[in-house]
Amino acid sequence: AVTESVITTDLTSPRAIQYAREAVEITQQINWRSGEAFALAFLAQGLEANGQLGAALAASESAQQIAAEIKHSQWLTAAKIVTGYIYITLYDYDRAIEILQSAFELAKTVNSINWLHETAAILGHVLVVTGQLDKAKTLLHSVMNSDQLPQTLGERMIWNAHGELALARGDAQTALSI
Image 1 (cartoon, rainbow, N blue to C red):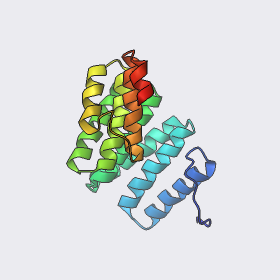
Image 2: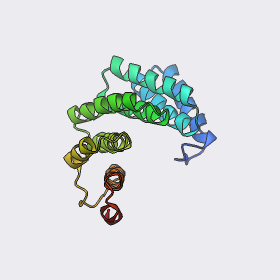
Image 3: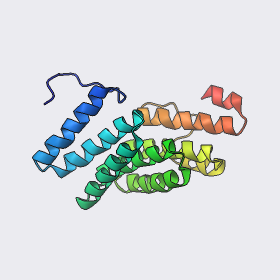
Image 4: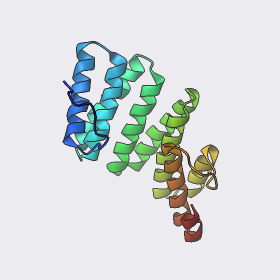
């Protein structure tokens, strides 16, 4: 059981992965499917950050399956975001885009500004990486203009994607102003 009062936010920490595994076990023991889906998504993030991509993908796909079964749109969105990110790490950009577009649409339907921003930023990044600059611009501007100051982590992620887009277009001056 978790005995420390402060849990690390460093996903690369072995302790974070240990805590996530414990959370998965506890949620399974008490049959808390929603908690299990969330814990699996968090575990997948930690595993991905540690380069354990096969295990990360298995955890994120399990999280998606559970969230879909129980119709928990928030956790399904989160699990899809993690899965998309794993596919980016695996350089399977087409699969990442497909999953992240699905997550983006789901984030819109659940009206979650947090998931909407996070998904748009990651999807915008992979669109830039794959040279789909017009799509990236349309997506990023649909959620936040590059001249809007970021207030949240998701907004900072979008700002970063705006900067990547500007650099990809050869506009270093705009990227520096962001």
